[in-house]
Amino acid sequence: MKITVVGSGYVGLVTGACLAEVGNDVLCLDLDPRKIATLREGGIPIYEPGLEDMVRRNAAAARLRFTTSVEEAVEHGTIQFIAVGTPPGEDGSADLQYVVAAARNIGRYMDGYKLVVDKSTVPVGTADRVRAAIAEELTARGLKLHFDMVSNPEFLKEGAAIEDFMRPDRIVIGADSEQARDTMRQLYRPFQRNHERLIVMDVRSAELTKYAANAMLATRISFMNELANLAELLDADIEQVRQGIGADPRIGYHFLYPGVGYGGSCFPKDVSALRRTAAEHGMEMQLLGAVEQVNALQKQRLVNKVERHFGADLCGRHFALWGLAFKPNTDDMREAPSLDIIDGLLARGATVTAYDPVAIHEAKKLLGERIRYAANPMAALDGADALLIATEWKEFRSPDFEAIRAKLRQPLIFDGRNLYEPAAMRELGFDYEAIGRR
Ligand SMILES: NC(=O)C1=CN([C@@H]2O[C@H](COP(=O)(O)OP(=O)(O)OC[C@H]3O[C@@H](n4cnc5c(N)ncnc54)[C@H](O)[C@@H]3O)[C@@H](O)[C@H]2O)C=CC1
Ligand SMILES: O=C(O)[C@H]1O[C@H](OP(=O)(O)OP(=O)(O)OC[C@H]2O[C@@H](n3ccc(=O)[nH]c3=O)[C@H](O)[C@@H]2O)[C@H](O)[C@@H](O)[C@@H]1O
Image (cartoon, rainbow, N blue to C red):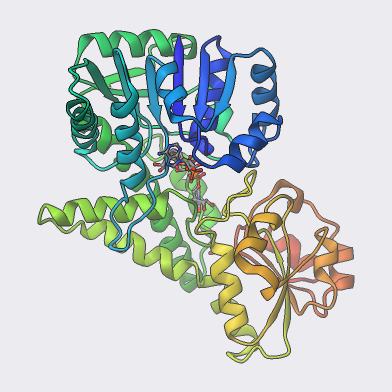
Protein backbone atom coordinates (compact mmCIF):
# COMPACT_ATOMS: atom_id res chain seq x y z
CA MET A 1 0.00 0.00 0.00
CA LYS A 2 1.09 3.58 -0.56
CA ILE A 3 1.33 5.31 2.78
CA THR A 4 2.28 8.80 3.89
CA VAL A 5 3.18 9.53 7.49
CA VAL A 6 2.89 13.18 8.45
CA GLY A 7 5.32 13.95 11.28
CA SER A 8 8.54 11.96 11.65
CA GLY A 9 9.01 12.02 15.43
CA TYR A 10 8.88 9.05 17.81
CA VAL A 11 5.52 7.83 16.62
CA GLY A 12 5.70 8.85 12.96
CA LEU A 13 9.13 7.40 12.36
CA VAL A 14 8.36 4.12 14.11
CA THR A 15 5.03 3.84 12.28
CA GLY A 16 6.67 4.57 8.93
CA ALA A 17 9.56 2.17 9.48
CA CYS A 18 7.37 -0.69 10.72
CA LEU A 19 4.86 -0.30 7.90
CA ALA A 20 7.73 -0.29 5.38
CA GLU A 21 9.24 -3.35 7.08
CA VAL A 22 6.18 -5.42 6.11
CA GLY A 23 6.39 -4.31 2.48
CA ASN A 24 4.46 -1.05 2.19
CA ASP A 25 5.68 1.92 0.16
CA VAL A 26 6.08 4.63 2.80
CA LEU A 27 6.89 8.32 2.55
CA CYS A 28 7.53 10.20 5.79
CA LEU A 29 6.99 13.94 5.88
CA ASP A 30 8.38 16.39 8.38
CA LEU A 31 8.52 20.16 8.26
CA ASP A 32 11.84 20.15 10.12
CA PRO A 33 14.45 20.12 7.34
CA ARG A 34 17.26 19.05 9.70
CA LYS A 35 15.31 15.98 10.77
CA ILE A 36 14.67 14.99 7.18
CA ALA A 37 18.29 15.64 6.18
CA THR A 38 19.51 13.38 9.03
CA LEU A 39 17.06 10.66 8.03
CA ARG A 40 18.07 10.85 4.38
CA GLU A 41 21.71 10.44 5.38
CA GLY A 42 20.85 7.22 7.22
CA GLY A 43 20.90 8.71 10.74
CA ILE A 44 17.99 8.94 13.12
CA PRO A 45 17.23 12.03 15.20
CA ILE A 46 16.19 10.07 18.32
CA TYR A 47 17.54 7.16 20.34
CA GLU A 48 15.24 4.17 20.02
CA PRO A 49 16.61 0.62 20.11
CA GLY A 50 16.40 -1.16 16.75
CA LEU A 51 15.02 1.82 14.88
CA GLU A 52 18.18 2.92 13.09
CA ASP A 53 18.74 -0.53 11.54
CA MET A 54 15.12 -0.79 10.49
CA VAL A 55 15.12 2.66 8.92
CA ARG A 56 18.37 1.98 7.04
CA ARG A 57 17.20 -1.44 5.82
CA ASN A 58 13.93 -0.12 4.45
CA ALA A 59 15.45 3.07 3.06
CA ALA A 60 18.01 0.95 1.19
CA ALA A 61 15.14 -1.08 -0.27
CA ALA A 62 13.46 2.20 -1.28
CA ARG A 63 10.34 1.26 0.70
CA LEU A 64 10.92 4.13 3.13
CA ARG A 65 11.60 7.65 1.94
CA PHE A 66 11.64 11.07 3.55
CA THR A 67 10.50 14.46 2.36
CA THR A 68 9.82 18.01 3.42
CA SER A 69 7.49 18.53 0.46
CA VAL A 70 3.88 18.64 1.59
CA GLU A 71 2.68 18.38 -2.00
CA GLU A 72 4.70 15.23 -2.68
CA ALA A 73 3.59 13.72 0.64
CA VAL A 74 -0.11 14.29 0.04
CA GLU A 75 0.16 13.00 -3.48
CA HIS A 76 1.96 9.80 -2.43
CA GLY A 77 -0.19 8.00 0.12
CA THR A 78 -3.73 6.77 -0.32
CA ILE A 79 -3.45 6.38 3.42
CA GLN A 80 -2.33 9.55 5.19
CA PHE A 81 -1.25 9.01 8.80
CA ILE A 82 -1.19 12.09 11.01
CA ALA A 83 1.50 11.60 13.69
CA VAL A 84 2.39 15.16 14.65
CA GLY A 85 2.81 16.40 18.21
CA THR A 86 -0.10 17.42 20.45
CA PRO A 87 1.78 19.24 23.21
CA PRO A 88 0.05 20.74 26.23
CA GLY A 89 -1.33 24.23 25.71
CA GLU A 90 -1.14 26.85 28.45
CA ASP A 91 -4.41 25.75 30.03
CA GLY A 92 -3.40 22.06 30.01
CA SER A 93 -5.54 21.16 27.00
CA ALA A 94 -3.99 19.47 23.96
CA ASP A 95 -2.68 21.99 21.45
CA LEU A 96 -4.14 20.85 18.15
CA GLN A 97 -2.49 23.42 15.87
CA TYR A 98 -0.13 20.85 14.28
CA VAL A 99 -2.90 18.33 13.71
CA VAL A 100 -5.14 20.94 12.11
CA ALA A 101 -2.26 22.26 9.97
CA ALA A 102 -1.53 18.72 8.77
CA ALA A 103 -5.21 18.25 7.93
CA ARG A 104 -5.35 21.53 6.01
CA ASN A 105 -2.33 20.48 3.98
CA ILE A 106 -4.10 17.28 2.99
CA GLY A 107 -7.18 19.24 1.88
CA ARG A 108 -4.99 21.71 0.01
CA TYR A 109 -3.23 19.15 -2.17
CA MET A 110 -5.31 15.96 -2.39
CA ASP A 111 -6.58 15.08 -5.83
CA GLY A 112 -8.32 11.77 -5.23
CA TYR A 113 -9.63 9.51 -2.43
CA LYS A 114 -7.63 9.60 0.82
CA LEU A 115 -7.98 7.63 4.02
CA VAL A 116 -6.86 10.02 6.74
CA VAL A 117 -5.72 8.18 9.88
CA ASP A 118 -5.09 10.09 13.07
CA LYS A 119 -2.36 8.50 15.19
CA SER A 120 -1.66 11.52 17.34
CA THR A 121 -3.23 11.53 20.79
CA VAL A 122 -6.15 13.92 20.45
CA PRO A 123 -9.22 14.87 22.49
CA VAL A 124 -12.60 13.42 21.62
CA GLY A 125 -14.10 15.31 18.71
CA THR A 126 -10.80 16.07 16.99
CA ALA A 127 -11.59 13.77 14.06
CA ASP A 128 -14.57 16.02 13.36
CA ARG A 129 -12.29 19.06 13.39
CA VAL A 130 -9.84 17.35 11.05
CA ARG A 131 -12.66 16.38 8.74
CA ALA A 132 -13.99 19.94 8.75
CA ALA A 133 -10.54 21.42 8.05
CA ILE A 134 -10.01 19.14 5.06
CA ALA A 135 -13.52 19.84 3.75
CA GLU A 136 -12.98 23.59 4.08
CA GLU A 137 -9.80 23.43 2.02
CA LEU A 138 -11.52 21.33 -0.62
CA THR A 139 -14.40 23.81 -0.78
CA ALA A 140 -11.92 26.67 -1.18
CA ARG A 141 -10.49 24.79 -4.15
CA GLY A 142 -14.00 24.21 -5.53
CA LEU A 143 -13.52 20.43 -5.27
CA LYS A 144 -15.73 17.65 -3.94
CA LEU A 145 -13.44 14.73 -3.19
CA HIS A 146 -14.30 11.75 -1.02
CA PHE A 147 -12.15 10.96 2.01
CA ASP A 148 -12.54 8.85 5.14
CA MET A 149 -11.38 9.62 8.63
CA VAL A 150 -10.09 7.02 11.06
CA SER A 151 -8.83 7.28 14.63
CA ASN A 152 -6.00 4.83 15.26
CA PRO A 153 -4.37 5.82 18.56
CA GLU A 154 -0.87 4.57 19.23
CA PHE A 155 0.06 2.68 22.40
CA LEU A 156 3.79 2.17 21.88
CA LYS A 157 6.26 2.88 24.69
CA GLU A 158 9.48 4.72 24.05
CA GLY A 159 12.44 2.40 24.42
CA ALA A 160 10.35 -0.56 23.26
CA ALA A 161 8.66 1.16 20.35
CA ILE A 162 9.54 -1.30 17.58
CA GLU A 163 8.52 -4.32 19.62
CA ASP A 164 5.28 -2.62 20.67
CA PHE A 165 4.41 -1.67 17.09
CA MET A 166 5.36 -5.01 15.52
CA ARG A 167 3.67 -7.09 18.24
CA PRO A 168 0.90 -4.92 19.63
CA ASP A 169 -1.45 -6.00 22.45
CA ARG A 170 -4.22 -4.42 20.49
CA ILE A 171 -4.83 -2.16 17.54
CA VAL A 172 -7.67 0.26 18.14
CA ILE A 173 -9.53 1.45 15.08
CA GLY A 174 -12.25 4.05 15.29
CA ALA A 175 -14.03 4.30 11.95
CA ASP A 176 -17.45 5.12 10.61
CA SER A 177 -17.17 3.67 7.12
CA GLU A 178 -16.93 0.04 6.02
CA GLN A 179 -14.36 0.92 3.34
CA ALA A 180 -12.10 2.52 5.96
CA ARG A 181 -12.45 -0.43 8.32
CA ASP A 182 -11.56 -2.88 5.53
CA THR A 183 -8.48 -0.92 4.51
CA MET A 184 -7.28 -0.74 8.11
CA ARG A 185 -7.83 -4.51 8.54
CA GLN A 186 -5.76 -5.13 5.44
CA LEU A 187 -3.04 -2.73 6.51
CA TYR A 188 -2.65 -4.33 9.95
CA ARG A 189 -2.98 -7.97 8.86
CA PRO A 190 0.83 -8.53 9.06
CA PHE A 191 0.80 -7.41 12.71
CA GLN A 192 -1.82 -9.91 13.86
CA ARG A 193 0.11 -13.00 14.86
CA ASN A 194 -2.09 -15.69 16.31
CA HIS A 195 -5.26 -13.93 17.24
CA GLU A 196 -7.35 -10.93 16.34
CA ARG A 197 -5.80 -7.80 17.73
CA LEU A 198 -7.98 -5.28 15.96
CA ILE A 199 -10.58 -3.67 18.17
CA VAL A 200 -12.96 -1.74 15.97
CA MET A 201 -15.18 0.95 17.44
CA ASP A 202 -16.60 4.36 16.71
CA VAL A 203 -14.24 7.30 16.26
CA ARG A 204 -15.02 9.14 19.50
CA SER A 205 -14.63 6.02 21.62
CA ALA A 206 -11.26 5.33 19.98
CA GLU A 207 -10.10 8.84 20.79
CA LEU A 208 -11.18 8.42 24.41
CA THR A 209 -9.61 4.94 24.67
CA LYS A 210 -6.14 6.43 24.25
CA TYR A 211 -6.58 8.88 27.14
CA ALA A 212 -8.26 6.23 29.25
CA ALA A 213 -5.26 3.91 28.88
CA ASN A 214 -2.68 6.53 29.80
CA ALA A 215 -4.77 7.93 32.65
CA MET A 216 -5.28 4.44 34.09
CA LEU A 217 -1.54 3.70 33.95
CA ALA A 218 -0.67 7.05 35.51
CA THR A 219 -3.21 6.34 38.26
CA ARG A 220 -1.54 3.01 39.04
CA ILE A 221 1.81 4.72 39.39
CA SER A 222 0.53 7.49 41.66
CA PHE A 223 -1.30 4.88 43.73
CA MET A 224 1.89 2.87 44.19
CA ASN A 225 3.91 5.98 44.97
CA GLU A 226 1.48 7.05 47.65
CA LEU A 227 1.41 3.53 49.07
CA ALA A 228 5.22 3.42 49.10
CA ASN A 229 5.30 6.64 51.09
CA LEU A 230 2.83 5.15 53.55
CA ALA A 231 4.91 1.96 53.79
CA GLU A 232 7.85 4.09 54.94
CA LEU A 233 5.77 5.55 57.76
CA LEU A 234 4.53 2.12 58.77
CA ASP A 235 7.91 0.39 58.56
CA ALA A 236 6.55 -1.96 55.89
CA ASP A 237 8.28 -2.84 52.62
CA ILE A 238 6.58 -1.77 49.35
CA GLU A 239 8.47 -4.38 47.33
CA GLN A 240 6.89 -7.17 49.34
CA VAL A 241 3.53 -5.46 49.07
CA ARG A 242 3.99 -5.08 45.30
CA GLN A 243 4.56 -8.81 44.95
CA GLY A 244 1.66 -9.55 47.24
CA ILE A 245 -0.86 -7.54 45.25
CA GLY A 246 0.66 -8.19 41.81
CA ALA A 247 -0.04 -11.91 42.22
CA ASP A 248 -3.75 -11.15 41.89
CA PRO A 249 -4.40 -11.39 38.13
CA ARG A 250 -6.93 -8.58 38.45
CA ILE A 251 -4.03 -6.36 39.50
CA GLY A 252 -0.98 -7.94 37.80
CA TYR A 253 2.72 -7.24 38.29
CA HIS A 254 3.22 -4.84 35.41
CA PHE A 255 3.45 -1.13 35.93
CA LEU A 256 3.39 -1.35 39.68
CA TYR A 257 6.76 0.15 40.49
CA PRO A 258 6.97 3.14 42.79
CA GLY A 259 9.66 5.65 41.91
CA VAL A 260 10.33 9.34 41.47
CA GLY A 261 7.05 10.06 39.70
CA TYR A 262 5.98 9.50 36.13
CA GLY A 263 7.48 11.67 33.40
CA GLY A 264 7.75 11.58 29.65
CA SER A 265 5.97 13.28 26.84
CA CYS A 266 2.66 11.52 27.37
CA PHE A 267 1.36 10.71 30.87
CA PRO A 268 1.71 14.27 32.20
CA LYS A 269 0.18 15.91 29.14
CA ASP A 270 -2.53 13.31 28.57
CA VAL A 271 -3.76 13.25 32.17
CA SER A 272 -3.92 17.03 32.09
CA ALA A 273 -5.66 17.10 28.68
CA LEU A 274 -8.27 14.57 29.80
CA ARG A 275 -9.04 16.63 32.90
CA ARG A 276 -9.34 19.67 30.69
CA THR A 277 -11.74 17.91 28.31
CA ALA A 278 -13.89 16.90 31.28
CA ALA A 279 -13.81 20.46 32.66
CA GLU A 280 -14.98 21.79 29.29
CA HIS A 281 -18.02 19.56 29.78
CA GLY A 282 -18.61 20.78 33.31
CA MET A 283 -17.11 17.75 35.02
CA GLU A 284 -14.22 17.67 37.43
CA MET A 285 -12.18 14.45 37.28
CA GLN A 286 -11.30 14.37 40.96
CA LEU A 287 -9.31 11.17 40.85
CA LEU A 288 -7.03 12.45 38.11
CA GLY A 289 -6.52 15.70 39.99
CA ALA A 290 -5.17 13.63 42.88
CA VAL A 291 -3.04 11.54 40.50
CA GLU A 292 -1.34 14.72 39.31
CA GLN A 293 -0.86 16.08 42.83
CA VAL A 294 0.69 12.85 44.06
CA ASN A 295 2.98 12.83 41.05
CA ALA A 296 4.15 16.39 41.61
CA LEU A 297 4.98 15.54 45.25
CA GLN A 298 6.73 12.33 44.26
CA LYS A 299 9.08 14.21 41.95
CA GLN A 300 10.31 16.02 45.11
CA ARG A 301 10.62 12.85 47.14
CA LEU A 302 14.31 12.17 46.63
CA VAL A 303 15.30 15.77 47.31
CA ASN A 304 13.19 15.70 50.49
CA LYS A 305 15.14 12.66 51.60
CA VAL A 306 18.41 14.43 50.87
CA GLU A 307 17.14 17.41 52.84
CA ARG A 308 16.22 15.22 55.80
CA HIS A 309 19.75 13.88 55.80
CA PHE A 310 21.78 17.05 55.22
CA GLY A 311 19.40 19.85 56.23
CA ALA A 312 17.73 22.40 53.94
CA ASP A 313 20.93 24.27 53.15
CA LEU A 314 22.96 22.20 50.71
CA CYS A 315 25.58 24.88 49.98
CA GLY A 316 28.96 23.26 49.53
CA ARG A 317 27.40 19.81 49.00
CA HIS A 318 27.99 17.94 45.79
CA PHE A 319 25.84 15.10 44.44
CA ALA A 320 26.23 12.45 41.79
CA LEU A 321 23.12 11.66 39.76
CA TRP A 322 22.73 8.47 37.76
CA GLY A 323 20.08 8.71 35.06
CA LEU A 324 18.66 11.74 33.29
CA ALA A 325 16.17 10.29 30.78
CA PHE A 326 12.58 9.94 32.05
CA LYS A 327 13.01 6.18 31.80
CA PRO A 328 15.60 3.73 30.45
CA ASN A 329 16.25 3.02 26.76
CA THR A 330 15.38 6.48 25.58
CA ASP A 331 17.12 9.84 25.34
CA ASP A 332 13.80 11.63 25.88
CA MET A 333 14.04 14.28 28.60
CA ARG A 334 10.48 15.57 28.36
CA GLU A 335 9.08 15.99 31.91
CA ALA A 336 11.90 13.81 33.25
CA PRO A 337 11.86 13.59 37.06
CA SER A 338 15.65 14.09 36.99
CA LEU A 339 14.97 17.72 36.05
CA ASP A 340 12.93 18.29 39.21
CA ILE A 341 15.59 16.56 41.29
CA ILE A 342 18.33 18.71 39.77
CA ASP A 343 16.27 21.89 40.24
CA GLY A 344 15.65 20.96 43.87
CA LEU A 345 19.31 20.31 44.61
CA LEU A 346 20.57 23.42 42.82
CA ALA A 347 17.92 25.61 44.49
CA ARG A 348 19.27 24.49 47.87
CA GLY A 349 22.81 25.46 46.88
CA ALA A 350 24.24 22.07 45.92
CA THR A 351 26.21 21.15 42.80
CA VAL A 352 25.53 18.10 40.66
CA THR A 353 27.44 15.82 38.30
CA ALA A 354 25.18 13.58 36.22
CA TYR A 355 25.66 10.53 34.07
CA ASP A 356 23.27 8.96 31.58
CA PRO A 357 24.17 6.42 28.89
CA VAL A 358 22.31 8.22 26.08
CA ALA A 359 20.45 11.32 27.29
CA ILE A 360 23.31 13.71 28.08
CA HIS A 361 23.06 15.31 24.68
CA GLU A 362 19.33 16.04 25.19
CA ALA A 363 19.85 17.05 28.81
CA LYS A 364 22.46 19.63 27.82
CA LYS A 365 19.85 21.36 25.66
CA LEU A 366 17.72 21.91 28.77
CA LEU A 367 20.29 22.23 31.53
CA GLY A 368 23.32 23.62 29.75
CA GLU A 369 26.15 24.31 32.19
CA ARG A 370 23.96 24.30 35.30
CA ILE A 371 25.36 20.87 36.13
CA ARG A 372 28.43 18.88 35.15
CA TYR A 373 28.26 15.73 33.05
CA ALA A 374 30.32 12.58 33.48
CA ALA A 375 31.42 10.20 30.74
CA ASN A 376 30.71 7.10 32.82
CA PRO A 377 28.87 6.23 36.05
CA MET A 378 32.00 6.00 38.19
CA ALA A 379 33.37 9.34 37.01
CA ALA A 380 30.19 11.01 38.26
CA LEU A 381 30.96 9.97 41.83
CA ASP A 382 34.22 11.81 42.42
CA GLY A 383 33.95 13.91 45.57
CA ALA A 384 30.17 13.50 45.85
CA ASP A 385 28.42 13.56 49.22
CA ALA A 386 25.94 10.97 47.97
CA LEU A 387 24.73 9.15 44.88
CA LEU A 388 21.16 9.72 43.67
CA ILE A 389 19.51 7.40 41.14
CA ALA A 390 16.71 8.74 38.92
CA THR A 391 16.54 6.23 36.02
CA GLU A 392 16.76 2.44 36.20
CA TRP A 393 19.22 1.85 33.36
CA LYS A 394 20.35 -1.80 33.30
CA GLU A 395 23.99 -0.81 33.70
CA PHE A 396 23.19 0.56 37.17
CA ARG A 397 21.80 -2.75 38.44
CA SER A 398 24.99 -4.44 39.47
CA PRO A 399 27.71 -1.83 39.88
CA ASP A 400 31.04 -2.22 41.69
CA PHE A 401 29.89 -1.18 45.15
CA GLU A 402 33.42 -1.18 46.55
CA ALA A 403 34.43 1.33 43.89
CA ILE A 404 31.36 3.44 44.65
CA ARG A 405 32.22 3.46 48.34
CA ALA A 406 35.80 4.43 47.61
CA LYS A 407 34.74 7.41 45.52
CA LEU A 408 31.90 8.87 47.58
CA ARG A 409 32.72 11.09 50.56
CA GLN A 410 30.44 8.84 52.57
CA PRO A 411 28.66 5.59 51.61
CA LEU A 412 25.24 7.12 50.98
CA ILE A 413 22.78 6.32 48.18
CA PHE A 414 19.32 7.77 47.54
CA ASP A 415 17.74 5.35 45.09
CA GLY A 416 14.61 6.65 43.35
CA ARG A 417 14.13 3.38 41.44
CA ASN A 418 14.57 0.69 44.10
CA LEU A 419 17.41 -1.04 42.25
CA TYR A 420 19.09 -2.73 45.21
CA GLU A 421 18.18 -4.83 48.23
CA PRO A 422 18.29 -2.62 51.33
CA ALA A 423 19.57 -5.42 53.61
CA ALA A 424 22.40 -6.28 51.20
CA MET A 425 23.30 -2.61 50.92
CA ARG A 426 23.49 -2.31 54.68
CA GLU A 427 25.79 -5.32 54.79
CA LEU A 428 28.02 -3.59 52.27
CA GLY A 429 28.18 -0.67 54.66
CA PHE A 430 25.94 1.71 52.75
CA ASP A 431 23.43 4.09 54.15
CA TYR A 432 20.75 3.29 51.55
CA GLU A 433 17.44 5.08 51.12
CA ALA A 434 15.00 3.89 48.49
CA ILE A 435 11.28 4.45 47.85
CA GLY A 436 9.10 2.62 50.34
CA ARG A 437 11.77 0.00 51.10
CA ARG A 438 12.65 -1.18 54.58
N1 LIG B 1 6.21 9.52 22.07
C1 LIG B 1 5.46 8.48 22.34
O1 LIG B 1 5.92 7.52 22.94
C2 LIG B 1 4.02 8.42 21.94
C3 LIG B 1 3.37 9.53 21.43
N2 LIG B 1 2.04 9.46 21.09
C4 LIG B 1 1.37 10.62 20.50
O2 LIG B 1 1.80 10.74 19.14
C5 LIG B 1 1.89 12.11 18.77
C6 LIG B 1 3.29 12.43 18.27
O3 LIG B 1 4.18 12.28 19.36
P1 LIG B 1 5.75 12.21 19.13
O4 LIG B 1 6.05 11.34 17.98
O5 LIG B 1 6.35 11.90 20.45
O6 LIG B 1 6.07 13.73 18.74
P2 LIG B 1 7.42 14.37 18.19
O7 LIG B 1 7.45 15.73 18.72
O8 LIG B 1 8.56 13.43 18.45
O9 LIG B 1 7.21 14.40 16.61
C7 LIG B 1 6.26 15.18 15.96
C8 LIG B 1 6.86 15.61 14.61
O10 LIG B 1 5.86 16.23 13.82
C9 LIG B 1 6.46 17.25 13.04
N3 LIG B 1 5.41 18.14 12.54
C10 LIG B 1 4.69 19.06 13.21
N4 LIG B 1 3.76 19.62 12.41
C11 LIG B 1 3.89 19.03 11.21
C12 LIG B 1 3.20 19.16 9.96
N5 LIG B 1 2.16 19.98 9.82
N6 LIG B 1 3.62 18.40 8.93
C13 LIG B 1 4.64 17.54 9.07
N7 LIG B 1 5.32 17.37 10.21
C14 LIG B 1 4.94 18.11 11.27
C15 LIG B 1 7.45 17.87 14.00
O11 LIG B 1 8.46 18.58 13.32
C16 LIG B 1 7.99 16.63 14.72
O12 LIG B 1 9.14 16.11 14.09
C17 LIG B 1 1.45 12.89 20.01
O13 LIG B 1 0.09 13.18 19.92
C18 LIG B 1 1.72 11.94 21.14
O14 LIG B 1 0.88 12.18 22.24
C19 LIG B 1 1.33 8.31 21.20
C20 LIG B 1 1.94 7.16 21.67
C21 LIG B 1 3.33 7.12 22.07
O1 LIG C 1 0.99 7.74 24.95
C1 LIG C 1 2.18 7.54 25.00
O2 LIG C 1 3.02 8.28 24.54
C2 LIG C 1 2.72 6.33 25.68
O3 LIG C 1 2.87 6.65 27.09
C3 LIG C 1 3.43 5.60 27.86
O4 LIG C 1 4.73 5.26 27.38
P1 LIG C 1 6.05 6.06 27.77
O5 LIG C 1 5.69 7.45 28.19
O6 LIG C 1 6.98 5.87 26.63
O7 LIG C 1 6.72 5.34 29.00
P2 LIG C 1 6.23 4.37 30.18
O8 LIG C 1 7.03 3.15 30.14
O9 LIG C 1 4.77 4.22 30.20
O10 LIG C 1 6.68 5.21 31.46
C4 LIG C 1 6.10 6.46 31.77
C5 LIG C 1 6.60 6.95 33.10
O11 LIG C 1 6.07 6.16 34.16
C6 LIG C 1 7.12 5.71 35.02
N1 LIG C 1 6.76 4.39 35.57
C7 LIG C 1 6.38 3.39 34.76
C8 LIG C 1 6.02 2.16 35.27
C9 LIG C 1 6.05 1.95 36.66
O12 LIG C 1 5.73 0.86 37.19
N2 LIG C 1 6.44 2.97 37.45
C10 LIG C 1 6.80 4.20 36.95
O13 LIG C 1 7.15 5.11 37.72
C11 LIG C 1 8.35 5.67 34.13
O14 LIG C 1 9.52 5.74 34.90
C12 LIG C 1 8.12 6.89 33.26
O15 LIG C 1 8.58 8.05 33.89
C13 LIG C 1 2.53 4.37 27.74
O16 LIG C 1 3.11 3.29 28.48
C14 LIG C 1 2.35 3.96 26.30
O17 LIG C 1 1.46 2.86 26.21
C15 LIG C 1 1.78 5.15 25.53
O18 LIG C 1 1.65 4.84 24.15
